[in-house]
Image 1 (cartoon, rainbow, N blue to C red):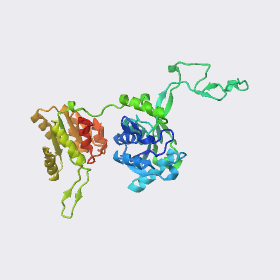
Image 2 (image 1 turned 90 degrees about the vertical axis):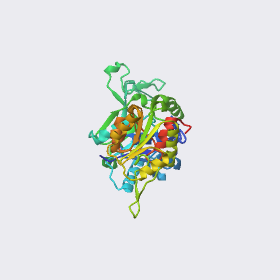
Image 3 (image 1 turned 30 degrees about the horizontal axis):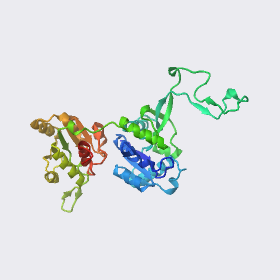
Image 4 (image 1 turned 30 degrees about the vertical axis):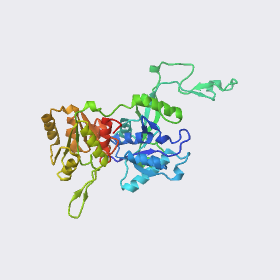
Length: 399
C-alpha cells in the first residue's frame, strides 16, 4: 500500500472568522471534521495537522491526528498552504523514518468533504497515473467580470466600468447542453506525488487530474456568513452514521485494538500487560444497564482478556480462530437476529464478523479493509474511548 500522508493546515489566526479552525459545524470543530474524514479514507495511511495553536493541536490529537508544530514564519497571513505542507511532509518523514509516496492537502474550510472524496483524489495519483489532482464540481454558470473592458468595446467606453463575459460571448447565449463543461475548483482536497511536489513547490505540476465531487457539498468557509450557511446545512448533509438504541439488541466487542491501543507490554518474565480506557468501562456498564446483550469476542489467548471481561461483568469467548462461527452460535442460542447486532473491531480477523452483523463498526485507527467493511467508524481510536463513544451515541448525550 503506498504511503499517503494527509496534511491538514490549521493555523490559529484568522481575520475573517476568528478561531475559524475550531469553529463548530454540526457540533464538531472544523479541524476535527477534516481529521475524521482523512482517517475514514481507506487510502490515507497517516494524518498530520500543521498548526501554531495549542488548542487546535489538542483537538487534532484527540481526533487521532499527529500534530506538527508550525514555525512562526509559516503561520502568518502571507504564508502559503504549500509551505505548510512541505514543512509537515519533511517533519513527518524525519519523525517516522518512512518516505511518503503521495501527499494530500486537505482544507478545514470545506466542512462537507467526505472520505470518499479524499480517497478519489488520492487514487487519481496512486492508481490513475496523475502527478497532481484536485477536487472539482461541475459548473454551468455564465461568468462575468466587472471593471475590465471587453475587446469589442476598446476605444468606445462609456462612463461606467461595465462588465464582460469571461467564459462566454455575451452576444451569444448557448443552451446548457451546448456549452463546454466547466469545472469549479472546490478548494477541499489536493493530491500530489511527494517527489514532484518537492521539486515544483506548488500543488499543480505535471499531469493534473480533476476529480468530480457532489456540487451540493461544496462550501468554503471564509467569512461568518459562510459559517452560518454551513451550520444550517449540517443537519441535511451530515447523515447519521450510528444506529439508535431501538435498532439493536446486542453489542459484541473485539478486544485487542478495540478495547486496547493494540500494544502489549512484556516484562522480563514474559508476562504481557495491556492498557484499557476507564471511560470504556463506564460505557460498557451503561450498555448493560440499558438491557443490551453483551459479548467480548477475541482471538487472543492471553488470560488478560478474561480478566477484563470479569471486571466488566461481560461474557467472553477468547482464543478462538473462528470468531464468526462463535458469534453466529451465540446469536442463535439467544434468539438474536444478527441484523440487530453491533460488532466493533479493528483488524482483518474481524472482517467475517463485520460481514455477519447488521451494524459493523470500525474504530478510528482500524485497518483500511475494516474501515471499508464498516457501516460506521468511531471518532476515537481503539483503547482511547471508542467503546465509550459507541455507548454514548447509542444511548444519548446524557451518558
